[in-house]
Amino acid sequence: MSSDGSSSYALNAIDRPYSMLVFMRSLPDPAWRRVLNARAAVVERVMREITERGNDSEPHDDVLAMLLESRDEDGSGLTDVELQDQVISLIAAGYETTSAALAWRCTPFSVPNVRKRAREEVLTVAG
Image 1 (cartoon, one colour):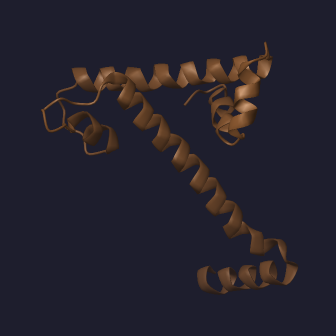
Image 2 (cartoon, helix red, strand yellow; image 1 turned 45 degrees about the vertical axis):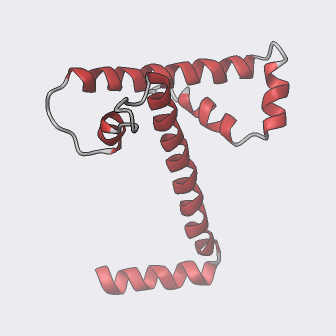
């Protein structure tokens, strides 16, 4: 989300136990301020994209387009806060599941003979 890596503070806060987050909120803690600043930067970026999409007449075929086009039974769409929450939830879920999957997928390669066999196979198949 941000080039300075500050959004990682917000993503890292997701992994903390809820009781720890409640405790952090009660203290004048610099780490909590970084989390709040990072979340504000993410919200600002998401809202900028939502606003740009609202001004763009070109059709888009992605999750944000689906969220923007979704309607309740009464015909109303999602509010800006609901859009923010949905997009941020999807970012967090995608980040966490992808990193966990990669970590588990790479674990077997920590065993020397598995790593050696995989390397030999790649060289045989790919040259």
